[in-house]
Amino acid sequence: MTDEYLFISDCHLDSNKPEIGTNLVNFLRQRALAAHNLYILGDLFEVWLGDDDPAPAHTEVIETLFDLSKTTRLFFLAGNRDFLLRNDLAQRAGIEIITEPVLLNLGNQKVVLMHGDLLCTDDHDYQTFRKKVRSSKWQAVFLQKSLLERQKIATDLRTESSAATALKKVEITDVNPDTVLSCFDRHSADVLIHGHTHRPGIHHYDRARTRYVLGDWNPEPSYLSWNSAAGFVLHDPRV
Image (cartoon, rainbow, N blue to C red; front, side):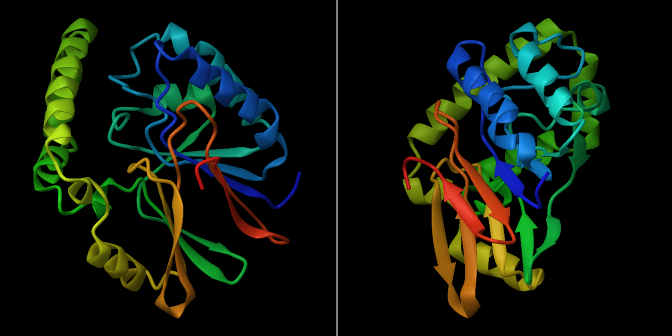
């Protein structure tokens, strides 16, 4: 066991893309095995419609997470695809559910963890939709529906979302620079880590502040590591 922290996001586990699940299982069994903590910053699943979903295609990943949890602390922060994940699945996978923003102190740096969608404030339609589906009232009504009904609704929403996103400028679906700086200031942070945008990279700001953007697993792994010897290292073939 080391003092290493690992951060991943946007795996988007999908039964139609089994190679992502295979790569994640290998990552959990090999690379993550010696880590002290693993943070999953949302969108672990392409879609998660409630813990009553048996999700047979994801059984191996869930079991591997549980095995890893015996030696490594696992944390999950909801994304825009899996905000309906609840305690039943968390217990099956051995993960602890956390809510954003998450504040950490690593070395002498103050770190903020987010999924990233709240930083995309230029996408007004999405922010309105997010506010609606994150309300406890909407979720209670939705989860009362049968799993089949929920699947149909989710499919329709994803079709509408894909069509709408295709018409938006790239800048609208990325983070807003002023919102990012406000986040740094609000939390007196040195480092901001998030995913969501599928645009992996390292961005430097004044006062030695840094934003690390995690990439999606499509299907290659993308992750950020930190340890006291090396500091932060972004591992992504696209960067």
